[in-house]
Image (tube, rainbow, N blue to C red):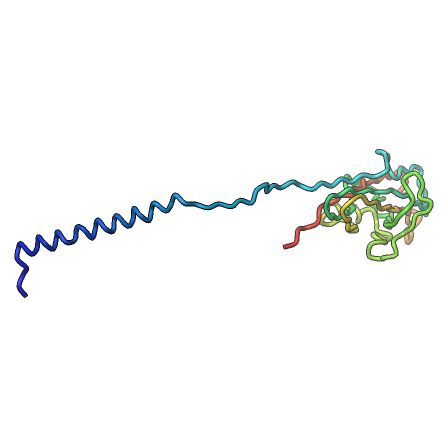
Amino acid sequence: MNKPSRRAQKIMAAATTPVAVIAAGALVYQASYAAFTGQTRNSGNEWSTGSVSLTDDDNGQARFRVTNMLPGQTESKCITVTANASVPSTVKGFAINPVTSVQGLENRILMSIQAGSDGSFADCTGFKPLQDAANGVIVADAPLSGIAQKNTFETAMGGWEVPKGTNSRTYKLTWKFDTTGMTQSQIDQLQGAKTGVDMQWEMRTAEPTS
């Protein structure tokens, strides 16, 4: 194959130059359209948190403060818990600050807790337990030592599903000094013993669903 002459090579080189110029011109021409734009906006997006608060009607007083307790003695009292929630929430009860005794008195104090309506811290008269067994009877004759182990929201007792708004529920707490099956000597060893626990109710917002 014969090589093109020097003159032909120059012509071919010259011929490629206009093509390059045309391509560059096209790029500039297309780039000039970038001056035309369009926009749309979704304005005012913002987020704020909900709020929950939980109160009771004890006015800072202990629910039970029993002295000179005798075997077989029992007592029931109530406390009303009010939830104010801007979103659905759950209320549970658990024990904190347990006081144990050398004699093990906490094993002999049996507690029952019922949920219901009416009644108050000042007077339990008129208390109406919930008919739903799952929510009505929260604890039945459980030793105080066992209740003391329910000490976090995750291990808490009950599970009141609170709707949005202000709602109240009354809890009836009953204790009994049970010495069933004990000898007189064992009962006598409990003399002078002291035990105790704080009952705390906590409300948490419901888990979000996808």
